[in-house]
Image 1 (cartoon, one colour):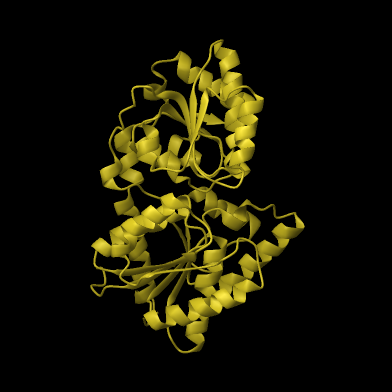
Image 2: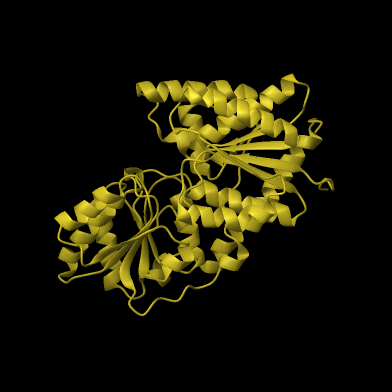
Amino acid sequence: MEDARPLRIIHCFRSPVGGIFRHVRDLVEEHRSAGHDVGILCDSSTGGAHEERLFSAILPQLSLGLVRMPIRRAISPTDALALYKSYKHIKSLQPDVLHGHGAKGGVVARLIGSLLRVNRYRVARLYSPHGGSLHYSRTSPAGRIIMGIERFQERMTDSLVFVCDYERRTYQEKIGKPRSPASVIYNGIKDSEFHRVPLDENAADFLYIGMMRDLKGPDVFIEAFARTEQLRGRPLTAVMVGDGPDRERYRALIAKLGLSRRIRMHDAMPATQAFALARTVVVPSRAEAMPYIVLEALAAQKPVIASRVGGIPEVLGSSSAALAIPGDAKDLSRIMAETLADPDWQVRVMPKPEDFQSIFSASHMAHDMIALYQNLQRQGLKF
């Protein structure tokens, strides 16, 4: 039986961009509608106009408020000041749950939660890696340091939450078997998003949507597009949507390959708006945990081609013909060409919408997360 008392939940993360921000927004909306009080603490130096619009939309749901302050990606001396300011603010809110997302969010939530405990205030401390530090090689000098820090922080963790089984396995392989309780709760899509998005009249053949940085593979997409044109023997069209530090470098690559008239670039926009711009979504990431864009595209009944990384095979199926070798433009172009040659490719390869929705819905995700929070309460945490 669920605890009837509303919980006070604060989500901590660094950058309000991409999948982590989407994940937290969905949790906020679902948990607020269930009567819980929710707040956000995140970085103030990242995000653009699109993210500001998202904050404006979700702000009425944040009964515990929104706090933004500079939180750098790399470890910095300024972290101490940010942690102190965060501690003072969070202490005043008297949260029941501190949930850190991503490496920096995990540090903030667990350190502040532990400081609160020193002052005899009991709070549940949870951590979801979302890929983050798990992308590092455990054999590199930086990787060894980061994995050591992650292992040490388990002492300050009441529960680990992984967004896919791949993330759980990677954590165990690189850091070790978790010493604190751990569970897998899949990312989910809101029920209102499960509907077909109609195409614009002049829709392109392929869409890339995501951060403009090498980890996400925009360069692989551009090179694969050029190869696909060669395989098909005719000009094709594509759209690239997103912001990021390497955007201009990709624009230069497009120009170098003579594709400026056939690949259009747009600033970040809502995924459903972008889905109308092209027939097939391509996710060419070099590394991922459980990317929301794959879930959003399938909910919109779009055909998806993606790298065989992270939890993507758990969504599309481990033997799916839609999975490409990570970082391999030649293999990616092979699948892109297949989608153009076979009009039944989507029906034949993509998961059935009803099967997909039964697993990857935001309502299931939020329910399981609250059950976890409340289970920690029943196990002895006196909030």
